[in-house]
Image (tube, rainbow, N blue to C red; front, side, top):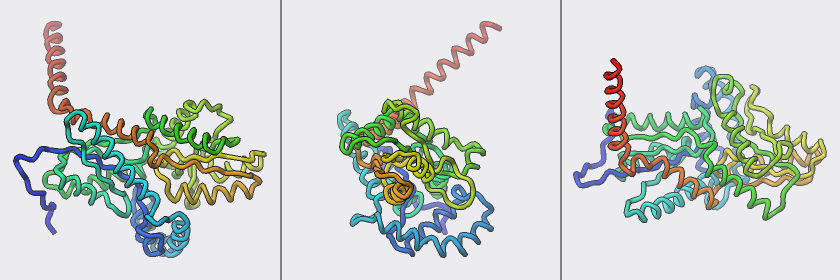
Length: 372
């Protein structure tokens, strides 16, 4: 096997382009046991996701997890699968198309060609490798890597970086990269979250309590220095302030616990039970950490969460949809992307900034010389 992939044919008259690589977690190719097994094998084999000794975990994974969990998970996927396929993939693809349109229009107004947009999934299809090859074939020599994870976690954002770097190692002439680590406090993102909640409240009314449910992680990730928990808390605080909520009117919780180890708390299922037993009859549940509806929101919250709340004495659980194709979110995503791309597209990164830095350094050297 060659050390490097074959490079696209070089043309001296070809203008270097800029690309945006959107990355999301991924989804099985179908709601079947075999497809889910392939997906879970890739997902759960990632050392960023399961941080226990590789040999031990592979034995557990192959002998136990992959023999029991795929069938159960496939049944859950079947509940949310629609005629277009996986909701996560459908929404992610639509976000990519809309972002392309938004940015294309903005750049066209300045007489410029908009960036190339590609979508890659960390696990499953379309892969990150395929998306990066698409950008390279389109002549992109600069790529903005934008994971669709607002809050940074090693198991999500860093894992996406791993896949990008692995593909980069196959290129003889790799593109320049700009990495987005998080945007958990980006004003446009917070405003989009608030707009989504208000839209739901205007349509269906407001429940007694709002639960902001984020995907959970093992507790040890926080102890080891992963900022995810802190990012989630800040997103929640900023959103609550935007919605003018008192602390007693909302609760931050964490879902999707797996295994016996302690995870980030409080657990969403426990909060739902406690609220219902405490006399709360209606709750709204919103998942700010997911920018597109998926299994964790449509099945775990809207279905399982509802059953948990009702069984504990509650009356109504309203799942507030994720950002999906909400215009406020797409506009915010376009603004954020433009902000990240500015240093490339206006030429400052390779010319003005270094020149200004050189001037400042020269002035400082002259002052130091004068003092001596």
